[in-house]
Every structure is written in structure tokens, then in C-alpha cells.
Image 1 (cartoon, rainbow, N blue to C red):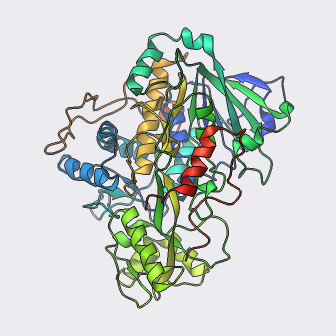
Image 2: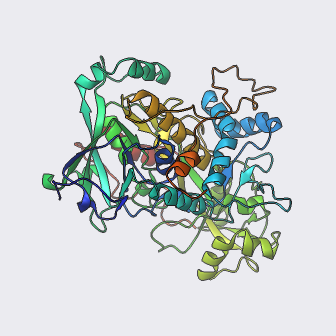
Length: 536
């Protein structure tokens, strides 16, 4: 491990390029949409280090198929809010939902400005598709690889920023903290505590997060939890000191036998943050996606997702007798429960999804990735139904954050699936995840720029459209920002010179158990998966 030089390359593919002890402005742990968009949203010149536990492209954001929601017009505000709240069993945080919807158009516009290619209608306007529990089409998409289209473009733009360094195969195993810094934190930290409106787990001022401890991850070790990796020789560890730390490590799918997630998503951020006093929220709110491809009882590895947008375009679920047995466009937990009941009635490890009502050109065009994968597995969507089975897909719980993604620990932020903004409630509405990642990552960046004494210029506010307010039952009356304009990642990039049947169970893996010495949060994660009936 080097000790005598600074980072000079925007991309360090080897963890050995880091000195043993270094300082930057912001550390971002995770390289998915939420982490990348945070980096793009920070002020120009913010010295940033991003850590990826695995390869850069091995993030769940790359796997998102269906699309990303947007509030297409003011008249849809109440319906979109109701769809989100209904899917979440009305346990959503109303303020967060309001922020999500009213920030959506600026987020989509910024993606377009950054060069993300989204499908267009014949008249040149954005094309929209529909998924389960949506009362109308409001989902932007790029074929059936929307996540890849967005994530790869954001990564391309981040690579153009000379002040951002990405380190692959480097895992965060702990946080650095400074009690004295917390006591001297001043008004910014007081405002953060008030905004969180959550009691601190300890009395007095919580120690301030001042960086991370990270270790290189050898090949094949990325699926191990941070608590296991922490046992490495101390000479391999790196202390990265920063004014702010952003946790963006994704969800917890690696704890489950059958999941659509990458196996390295093992809930590390929740473990680590909880050990330093961060409040965790809704740790038992786990979403099971209704349809992943059933590839036999011996299949291992990540389950292949069959996007909900397939059902939005006309695909239907069939039982053993070839009959429909449910409304395919109900919320995910409702459809999953119906599938599991039907599997029990049929005594089958799967049900079938038929594309008979979907035109062949839509199958080969809109769903090209799914079509090719199924073809390789021996199924032609244009001529036969495919076997599908539920799989763990998303984590609605996580590290409690306020409206600006600040945790209850000063200097520590969480974004994306790692965080719990309250947007999703008990069950996420389809295609709200990428939007949440963008909206609250940008708010985290603005909060950091304003409150963490960065040695760079801070301009504007997070865009929040004041035109899209509730008109009926969801008239909010919330104390929210109403600015229509603000700084954007696209603007930052431009300044930088960028272009003008069931396999096993849905429960945790047999090895996903915690020892007494591990963090309490790890026990919470595993207990939730072992003892409760997951949100279906």
C-alpha cells in the first residue's frame, strides 16, 4: 500500500493506488446511480473519492429494467401521489413523496442534458410506459435496460471530472469520527438534528463522522460482509479523512438465497452506520418482486428479473391450466402473494408469464434484453410463455435520513437504497427507485455544499417545481421549497469540459448469520428475513 503520494488519476482500478492516509472533501461509498449523481451534483472542484466494493459496473442500478417515473403534468400530481401511497400501504412519509414528485421533471431534464437516451414518441416528446399499481403511463424508459443507460452515462460524466477519483475493489469497513468536531459543529449540525426529527440513540452530541476506513477486496471476497473484511491485516487498511461521508452501497439482496441483486449487496452501510449511532428505520420492509425467470431447482447466482413493464404492455400470468389468476397490474406485494398462492395450488415451483398479447416487434424492441436472455435459456417469448417465480428485489428500509439525506450522525449522509427517505412506505411503487436515487442524491450534495464548509463555491438550491402542488385530497400545506431552478449536475459537467419456480426460498442464505461480536444492525437484517413474512 503506498504512503507517499496523492491520487492523480480519475480512475484507480487497483486499490493499491491509495496512500495509507489521505484527506479529501467528500467520500462516497458506492458507485450506483445515487453515488454517481451525488458526485456530479457537488460543486465544481469538490475533491471526491468514490469507493466500489466490486467492479464499477457491478451495481444494481445497472440492472434496472423498467424505467424511471416522472410527473408528466401538474394534473397528475394527486393520482401519482395516491399510486405511491397506496403501493406503500400509506406508511410513506408525505413530505418525501411531495419532494420526489415535484423534483422529478428537473431530474429527468438533467438526465437528458447529460446525454441519457430515453425513448421518444412519434412527435418527439418523451414516451411513457405503465407498470403495476400505476393508474396511468408515466414511466420514461430506454428499451428494457433503463438502468444501464442512465448509470453508464452518469459514470461517463463522472470520469470527466478531474477532482473525482473512483477506486474499485475497495470496501468501507468502518467510519472515522471526532467527538470534538461534533461539539464545534455549530449551527449546521443543530439544523440537521432538527430536520431529522428523530431522537439520537445516545445522550449529548453525537461524534461527528470525519471519514472512512477501507480495505482492498480480493477477487471472490466481495460477497463477504464488511464485518468479515474488517479482520484483514491492519497494514492493508486506508484512512480517508473527509468533511462529509455519503453511504450509497445499495440494498441487502446478498443476504437472500434468491435475489435479483448482486451478491455483494450485504447491508454493510446499515451495519457500520448503526455501530456509530445512526438510526435505522423499517428494517423489515423487504420487497419481493413477482417475476424473475425460473431456471431450474439447481440454479444459483443472481436471479434474472422479468420487468414489470412486460405486464404493463400486456403480458399475463397463467396457472398450470393456462388460465389467468390475478390482476397483473396490482402492487408488487399483491401480485407476489397471488403467485405464491397459485404455486401452492398447482404444486408447481413457478407460474407462467405469457406474451401472447404483446406484439412481436415490442418484444424484440422494447424488451430486447429480456428476449435475448430468455432465448439463451431456451424460451422464445414470441411463441411460448416463460416460467417465473418471485425473488427478493428491493429494500424499503435503511438508514433514516431527513429531506436532505442527512442521517442522525453529523457529517454522515445516505442515499439510494441504503437510505430510508420514507418515499416508498411499506412497499415501493414500480420505477420510483431510480427517481428517488437522483432526487435525494442531489439534495444530499446541496446540503453538503452548504453545511460542511467545503472550500468550493456553493450556488443555488435543489430544483423543486412549485407548479406541481396537490389540488385535491393531497393538498399538502408542507413547508417545502418552491424554486423552479437551481444548479444541476449537467451544469457541473459542462463547466468541467464535458460535451456541450422457487429456487430454495426467498429467505436469507444459510451463511447469512451473525456472530455476537457483529454489529447489531446485521442481526436486525438477518432476523427480519428469517422470522417475518416478507412484504409481498
